[in-house]
Image (cartoon, rainbow, N blue to C red; front, side):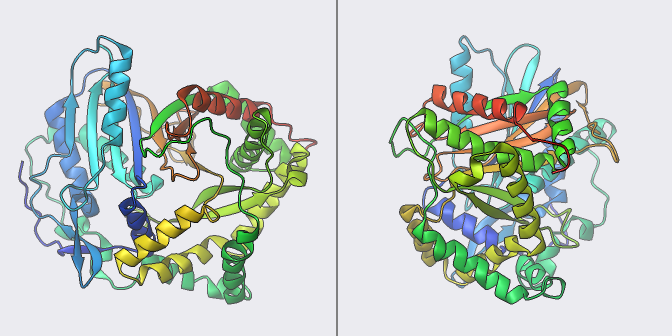
Length: 469
């Protein structure tokens, strides 16, 4: 398939977060994000291929190849879509393990950004009635929320393509151009600068946050999650769990009663479960520090597929975790304080400083951070929230793909080696889906599944205390 896109600038710059994630990728820390749609019913392959092509047209970063200009990386837009991003595997599996091994192998296959687009898609038949549609994104091109934006675009084009197969996209070319290709500077740095007028003593707070993380934090490194292996492989595996509609309503009701958000409760439960898990295996937990991504989307960029996220790394000590309601109160207070002081923007300045160096220097910086382990958090927990809900509703706006029904949507987050595992959550059709990504070199499948089960148990049984935290 070859479709020429007229009027597009020839390249898209990388922002500071893009470059740092690319540097991590280059030191063999796989920076891949997966979004999986579970489908019941048949999917038209030609229509699906056309939908992927149209989604790439709508989001030009997903039809770029990585290039270097003046020792700095950029993304070169490909005018001809002659590289098919869709793979179809339609066969029966004699054993369930064969199917699982194939899916894991496909999800672990690296993306060579110099030769392939930063997205690939697999349509995999799981049973006669069930298929999976698996989207894999390179994290240097999209964060979790923007990956979902591409998925929604593709599904909407598939549904809209019922009467448009073979038609030429008649929308103006300028509507299909990434706005970053038409402007200079780093949009995240510019957005960070814009916070100065909103926060008193903003500059001093940025410096203090960086000193606290990279200087003071070195004297008390984060506790690691106990693991039963010590290999070096970068292979990833995945396990999944779901809170039912009723279970989610109960958890949300507890959070409302305590005057906190669902995210606050998920974070507090994660601190508790790491502490509990380590204690079960005879390991003491001192400073647990959880990496929680936050959306810092600049105005005008919310419909652009890119990285528009930083994160908070809020620590707790044993005394903070001794009482569940007090821990929840601390998590809520620390989150509000970090939001008000724009703590997430402090890391943008650090990322931008690193991104001013050539990529080979950035790789050395990342290798140092990974090797020392001091600056890598205990675990990552991210919640992307509701997945394309109807306006003003928790119900999904889209539950079908042509004649197929979208039964569920799950996603996964990357894992750097000192962590060993990460947790991603998202709500679809009022069910809260969890995906745990882990390194088999560090965790056996049994241990990974046990940790995820313990986390869900902690969430459902969490003691929020008296109403009105």
